[in-house]
Image (cartoon, rainbow, N blue to C red; front, side, top):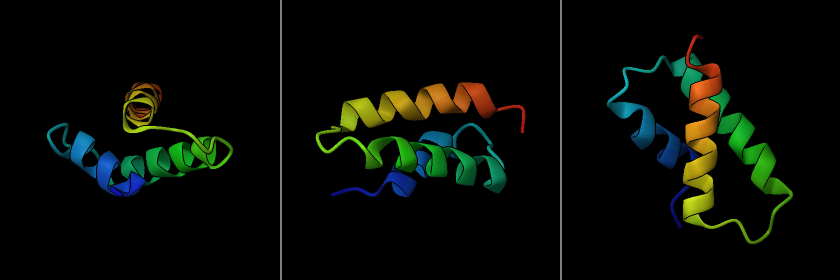
Length: 58
């Protein structure tokens, strides 16, 4: 399966995100889905988008 960090990196690739922002989003999403055994790709993508919007000022 595709790792969370790969998904975050590919989402952020065309947005010129800083490594710090990528790390922060990856950490948050991993924590959220650690408690959710049946998280699917679409759900994870949605979380990445939400966390990106929340944190993009970093």
